[in-house]
Image (cartoon, rainbow, N blue to C red; front, side):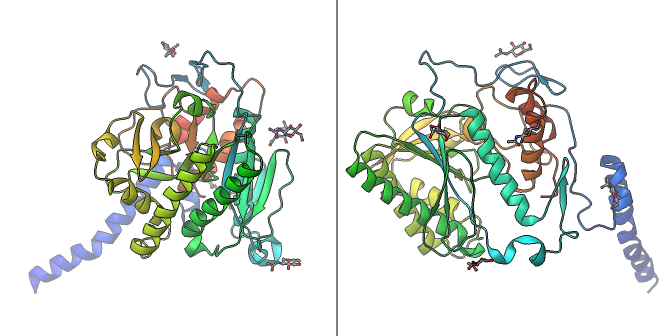
Length: 389
Ligand SMILES: *[C@@H]1O[C@H](CO)[C@@H](O)[C@H](O)[C@H]1NC(C)=O
Ligand SMILES: *[C@@H]1O[C@H](CO)[C@@H](O)[C@H](O)[C@H]1NC(C)=O
Ligand SMILES: *[C@@H]1O[C@H](CO)[C@@H](O)[C@H](O)[C@H]1NC(C)=O
Ligand SMILES: *[C@@H]1O[C@H](CO)[C@@H](O)[C@H](O)[C@H]1NC(C)=O
Ligand SMILES: *[C@@H]1O[C@H](CO)[C@@H](O)[C@H](O)[C@H]1NC(C)=O
């Protein structure tokens, strides 16, 4: 019993130790947040937190001096004149419902987040992200278009130049959204294939993306620099999920659309038959990886090198582009991190980084002297923080 009571005393002390160390941790990182520690998410920041910029001193990585970029990203390397988005449409799936809209359904004060001078409810937050998605596209590729695929029952209305809302029937509940997204992509490609038969010769390439990305370079070059692919995916060195579903480019030729549609139908079939029980967010990525890896000649070792490559998968010529340039995510936490490549084209604000997406736009739009590269320095310095979105 004696031993036991000593042990018991220690056990009682453990949580206190834990709480103390936790408080110290919070205090060190965000001294002001300690005042608000009764709030549930006190480890997630509700304001920008800046750290050092990674990748300093590395060649071909963005060099920063505070918020100021010492290099210009997306320097024109091609001798072609830049068309900055001629013949490219960005396509994203987005829905919004009556039940979730407005001051009546949501208690405004409790879930409100503030970015700059604006406060947002959860729904307003998603809409703000969609708008910033469009803003960045229109800066980086002013001659492109944006298409928003949505539930016909959704109350989405967006009135902006070069943006169209396109209802596609389906089952858009939260639990089914990733599956429905592939269905909507397929339905859209099917319509475009029919349009192309009616009006051949008008080629528009399609880039299907999540709406929490910022396009920061010209993606039109991809279709010229790699003239033979049907669809393009982005990969990273990640065993379980080497392919990210947030970026799928489709060449707008008849062959490109047709082969991509068949490829996505295969992904849909694998998703429905193998991954319905997977987390509702990951099934599409697991299915994508399954379809690619099931091809006998495919060498997964190439996912560990950060170099583009092309491979035929079930009759589709698939271009694999490194996430580092075409789907760059600021890493959270303490992983290895070598900064930002100078030729980065797309920044993906996954998960809680969405606050940073809005903060980045506000910074970019705050003055005409702020360049996209300067803004990327801000992203580089603050991307490791967990934010409250
Ligand atoms: C803490 O909460 C108060 C009152 O809600 C707020 O004014 C203050 O900005 C918060 N501080 C931080 C660091 O979030
Ligand atoms: C980026 O800027 C740094 C600092 O001015 C310079 O040393 C480096 O050569 C530049 N890198 C490239 C690829 O231009
Ligand atoms: C974008 O909208 C403007 C204004 O309506 C229009 O003049 C322009 O042609 C549009 N651009 C594209 C690529 O559709
Ligand atoms: C949304 O609300 C409007 C009016 O507030 C109503 O006319 C419409 O039918 C509603 N839509 C759905 C899907 O409930
Ligand atoms: C950019 O900032 C100006 C104010 O300086 C504002 O009027 C404008 O609406 C902003 N643009 C966007 C797209 O947010």
